[in-house]
Amino acid sequence: MATTVEKRKPVFIKVEELKPGTNGHNLTVKILESKPVPAPKPRRAPMSFSQRSQRPSRINECLVGDETGCIVFTARNEQVDMMQTGATVILRNAKIDMFKGSMRLAVDKWGRVEVAEPANFAVKETNNLSLVEYELVTVQA
Image (tube, rainbow, N blue to C red):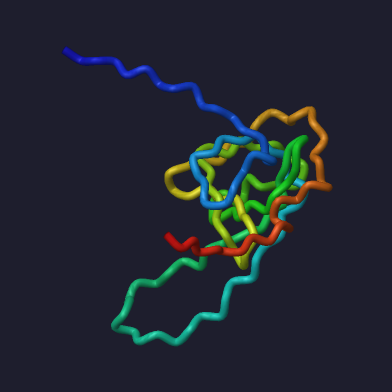
C-alpha cells in the first residue's frame, strides 16, 4: 500500500528576517543590480591533480531585496542568466553564506531560482543587510 505524503506549503519570509548561518529560506525579491565578478587568476597546479578541463564558473553579485530590506545575492553559472536588473525572482531553499564578516544570500544545488511575475513592491534600499558586519564570538562553557 502506497502512502501519500502531503507536501508542505513553502513558507516565504522577508529579507529583514535573514540571520547569519541560516538556510532553507524562500523569498520573492527584485533585482536592483547585477555585476559580474571577475574570475580569479588560475593557479599553477600539478597536472596530475586534475586532468579534466574545468569550465570557468560565472559569478555575479546581485543586489536583491523586498519592501523590508536588501542583501547581496551570489548568482552562479546558469543563475546569472536569470538575474536581470529590474526582474523579480523567487529564491527557494536559499542559504546565508558569510563573506568577510557580512551576509550573502546564495542558492546551491539543493535550491532553485525561478523568474516570477513582476512584484508590486518598492525595495527598501536603506536596510542593506550585507553592509552589517558580524564578528565571530566564541563562548566559553
